[in-house]
Amino acid sequence: MKIQLVLALYDCLICGEKVIRKTFCAQNNISERTFYRYMSEIGHFLMHNKDGMFLSVKDPLGEYFIERNPGN
Image 1 (cartoon, rainbow, N blue to C red):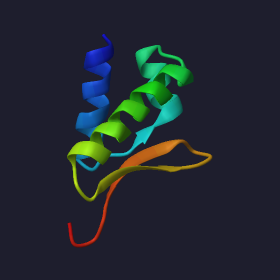
Image 2 (image 1 turned 90 degrees about the vertical axis):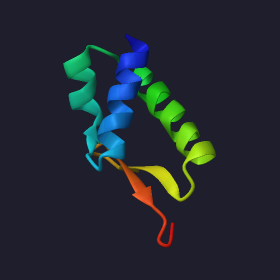
Image 3 (image 1 turned 90 degrees about the horizontal axis):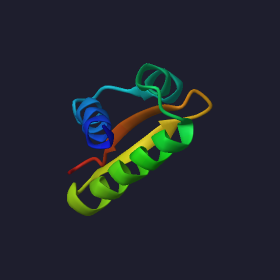
Image 4 (image 1 turned 60 degrees about the vertical axis):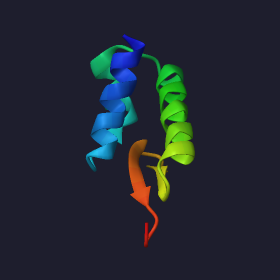
């Protein structure tokens, strides 16, 4: 289940969608702590494998999205 959820998160984010923490947790019956771990893994993946892309969040909404550095 973990791999499927991490891939679902990544797919949404890489397609330009935003992920709301509370909504995703409720829909998938996971804790916010688990969500943070999944997002951390995605953030590390982007940092090491996707030049110019990074994970960003708007607080306090917990709205996650991928940003791209200009020129990349």
